[in-house]
Length: 135
Image 1 (cartoon, rainbow, N blue to C red):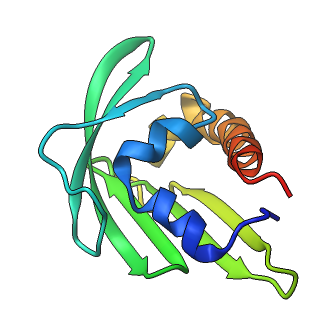
Image 2 (cartoon, rainbow, N blue to C red; image 1 turned 180 degrees about the vertical axis):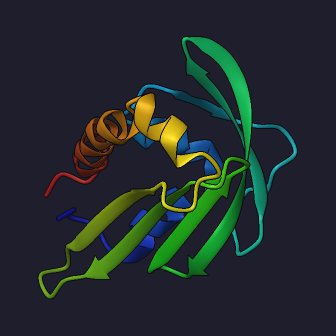
């Protein structure tokens, strides 16, 4: 539960330049050049990453419902998904999901330990997000 409206949270998620501010994994460094300022369905955007070595990744928005849902996948097929549910007290229930069921190589993802690592990163991301909107 985050003490912010879905609109406030979605504005952060739909702006790739803001992703390093909320990333709890420590891998997202900056948004790539030439991408959109605000994401929309089908938008392609790059991110500068670092997991050991620095690299760049290209993502495509595959689900989009303004102020409610946004998901993107990268070239290996797995997805990052955010669902925002407004609550009666003005807060928002935020669910971040790492969906590797659509990955081109789910075995490689599992063997590399990404489901466990990403669970830890999601927990830290949600903590960081909550810290941006102290209730």
